[in-house]
Length: 299
Image 1 (tube, rainbow, N blue to C red):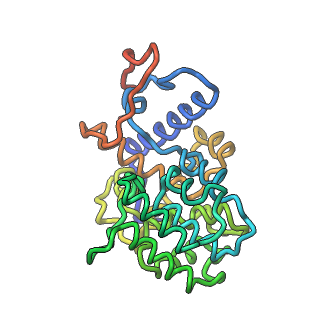
Image 2 (cartoon, helix red, strand yellow):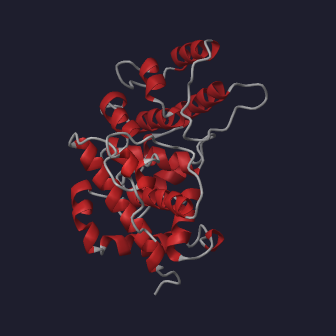
């Protein structure tokens, strides 16, 4: 028996968020008018989707960037690293108007230098990417790190039997910390054929997901150590998979462990808002019902 246990009042917040967020996605996909929900916090805040690959950038990458699936696994790993480090479709579309076809350092350097000189936005504002330091621009440091990766990575390092092992391998490269490496391996799972046998049981630990999991288990974030992350995470994912209210969502969206890790990040955000905190990413609700929103009981 695990040392961690579900704390039902906080678990309910996570479950209700999952149900309502998926309802929002479906209502929007069916062309219904905004705000797609009667919950004020859900309508006026930007949220990730329940299924990670349903997010706008992920959809764009699958349809416009990861178009050449005949590339070697190592080539796809470098491409996915570039994609997630930049994470901005407008930039990636300029760099690869016909989709990713390999890492071309000189061409990329010219294009990014031109963007920087014109003071155009290169990176997304969502992820925190470390700068180059030593007078090197961030874009150039990222490009140099990826050039080193391109020159040394082998196909075997993309272990298509294990997301966890691939994540570990990617973190050996400069500039790929746990979070970005996790984003990269989550993409690789969908664009490189393999069994990826731990797709339903493994996801990387991150600060947001740790806060969310600590909330659901009613413990302190520091109580969830790297050595106990998966144990605690499995308590949460097992509860979700056995929850009859979520059966249809799991079946329809084919949710995997990384999706549930994302849900923890959003649960942490919802917990903060319910406690009176503010969100950095506001979303202006629109439509005739926008002034009639209310909070349904999530606590």
